[in-house]
Every structure is written in structure tokens, then in C-alpha cells.
Length: 369
Image (tube, rainbow, N blue to C red; front, side, top):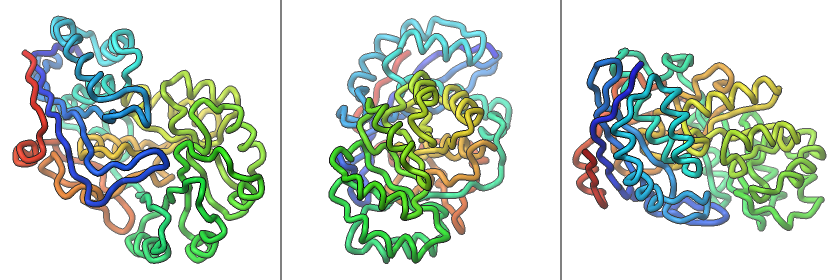
């Protein structure tokens, strides 16, 4: 599958969120993204592919930020355009050398080739990667508020199979217990976003006894031993690393050190779909849980997340997958993703950009030839 690049368009968009997205470190009201569109040749066939760069404006989540990605892409393009890659593996290896510290940018460029392959082969992305075309279970993230019981009931009624609660250090975990017990047939998870630095041992014991399925990233991204110790002390709840997993080597390290029993897989953070699939296989072989997280992405990234969630090794655990309309009033693609009874259909259609959204929410458009 020889690959040649011809031109590249970068759409810098700012998609307003319906409600602010809050973590322990930040509040996002507008999600800025780079949407990539390129004309490439796959085995002599000219085709357009789409991708998405999911880094943020500031380094609150990872060190990689959008402005740095743009500079790197401007510098990389003349060399990328002149290359002929024997196959996708050759491209992935080349990008790893050229962009070692920018996995989100690597992932966005790799997306273009995967998307183009679906159009050339007339297969779905899930079929190309060995997944199933059956719907995948959905999860939803909620903030802890005074209306939590009502919000959980609504999510339960809509059929969500897992409910994630965003839990900063000041969370009253005892107050969550009645809600979790009332909806005992739902899998609950907590997301600490690296903020649990002063939780008491008693609070940690209470969480373990609540029946919470997993807790994402309790401590800092480099706190490997803290996570290891916590996982050793928990019998009912899995630690799931997220921000700690900046690359494939981090997953290898976590497995070697037994730092966690679960791993939040985000293909953008790991540098692309190929690396994410490799990581899932490694985690499965180690007897640990791999599941699909989200990056507050557009429908382009959502399509990749849903397809990745269709792989046999991860499809039984509900990922961070919800309706297109949950976060944004308008998205960048002509087709939306709508769940039904807690399940999301795997994409079986071509991804196409909608011009009106690009015009309305476009910040900058850059064309490389």
C-alpha cells in the first residue's frame, strides 16, 4: 500500500460546548481542534482523507499544545510531501522519528490514511482493524452536583452502561454511596484527573467498598509507585491510568511495575490508531483491562473511538462514547452519531466535512501544497 501525500488543509476550529467541561485542572467552554484534510494516493488511487489533532491550547493535560503542533506541521510538510511510504507501518515509524514528542499530531496524520483506506476499500474502519460492526456499549461522564441523583437517573433511563463521576479532592464520597447503591446494575467509575494528593486512607477504603469499578488517574502522571501501592490495597476497584500514558513505553512500564489493573486508551495520546491497537493487545496479554477513553473530540475523533471500541478485547467495557450532540450544538461532519438504548452503532458511512460549521466556527484555515 504505497502512500504519497499531495496537499494538506488545516482547519482550526473552535466548537462551543453546550455546557462547560470541567476537570480538576481546567474548564473548557470552547473546544479548539485542528481538522486535517489531505489528498493522498494509496496504491495509485487518489483519495481524500480526514484527520483530527486533539491537543489543547494549554499544557494542562499534556505538554503538547496546538500552536506547537502547527509549527511542527509547517516544518514537516515539505519533507512529508516528498516521501513515498511503502505502507502504513512505514509512515507510522517515520512520524515517530520526526515527531517524537507530539503524539496528537502523529495520530491526526495517521487518521488521514486510515480514513482514506475506508474509501478505497469500501470497508468500515472497524472492519479494517479487525473489529465488529455490532453496536458498542456507551458510557457517560457527569460532574458531582446537587442534582446528581436526577442526572444519574436520566443517564440510566437513556441506557448508559457506565457512569463516570468527576471527583475532585473535596468530593463527599459518603454522599455518593446512596446513588451508587440505588443504581447497582450500572458500572460506576470515578475520574480524579491527577488531583488526589491529600485523600485520607479512610476515604480510599470507602471508595474500595463502594463497588466502584475503577478510578482514573488518582495521582500525578509520574506517581507510578503511588498508583502501584493504591492498586495493591484495593481489592474491589481498579486503578486506571490515563494521563500517565503518554506513549507506548509508559504502558510497558506500568505493566512491568503493576501500577494499575486498568488502562484508559486514547489513540490520540498514544500517537495513533496503530499504537493504540498494539497497546490493547499487550494489556490483554497481561490480563489487565483496556478500555476506550475520550478526548472531547469532534465526530472525526469520535468515529475512530467508536471503531476502536468495537475490537473484541475492549468492546465489553463501556467506553467514553456518547451522542455527537451531547457536547456540541454543531459538529464538523455531515453525519452525526446517535446512541440508542445505551448502544452506539459503529460508523458505516464516509466521513464528510460540513462547510457551514467550518465557516461559522473556523478560526484559521491553512493550505499546504
